[in-house]
Image (cartoon, rainbow, N blue to C red; front, side):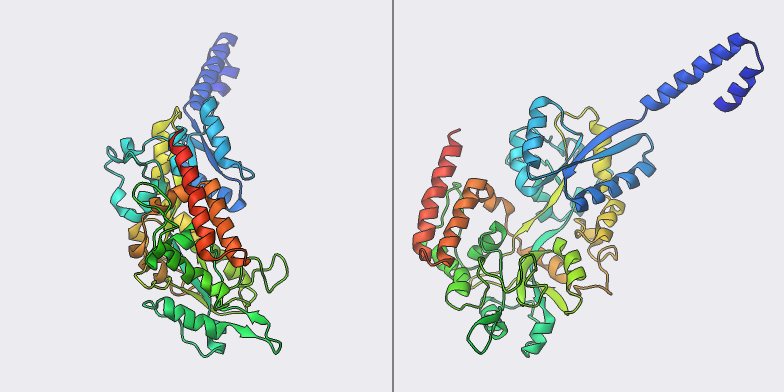
Length: 436
């Protein structure tokens, strides 16, 4: 319409031309001002920014009045930058975060409580999100500060080719610690000189998601109800032995300071380790690097007391200072819709957090490994309360735990000595923080 009016104005008197041109400018400015620009922060990794841009572009097609600008934060200082932006009142509108970032982002007022939206928006089905995942975004006050974008559970990846060479069947869903030890022994191979050339397994021993679930499954605990470290408890020390003895006594698990491959080569992908503990986002890499092997996944084995599996998630929240809360909510709601969750599933970087997509082909790809995708879904019911280990994710505490594992694996101290010392150090750190 504006184009036809301008053509007409050219043939008319100058006054009419002036009026119409001014009107056109006014309409153009009004159209521009009607577009809401949202800023979205994500980790600087290409996989994260690619996913965020894919979600943003899909969202914009049905919301032409909203433009989402993705801002990757390079390096390891993502949390520091967001906290500084909160202090400077320059936060983006939509914020990527992980379960471990929920408490500090609440404390430093980076993100706002989403209950204001979830309670009022009847079109949003909060109950479709796995409750274990949903709880990863809940603060101590009961507020919801992150919507989890994925189902995050820890599982066991295993090299079926190496299993077959050893005459072993696939691990069963009901297997336990004793089964793991027996299988790992058969999968550990030595050369004629007695040197180990293939390990039965490897684990991220000092990773909280690994050792905490392992300890609890074998009768111990890591944090009590008062928020105190419990590494000194006899039952916890016994449970830690079940993990560290795989390395130091049975020698079926590869020590963390050792590798059977050249630097930068994954021992599991190279067929030098038969079983590892990991998460679904590792799947795309194994699909690319393990083409010479048959491989699959299984639930983690039950401990000597019960089966416990660590859960966690990444997701998104709305900043506390956004000037566009409703538009930001519309974007979050899209990310958590079936359409948005299918975008995530098709990338292969995560399992949708919606129960309604548990069997959806967006992530269940029968022609691709792994085939036992039920292992991820079935693990959910054994998930431990993620907040159990939150105090242990603090950098100083994590360092103390890592130091204890290092001393055990390098022979500098036994389990009792190393972890009793860590217990004292951890509680000093936690006490000092509680007084601040």
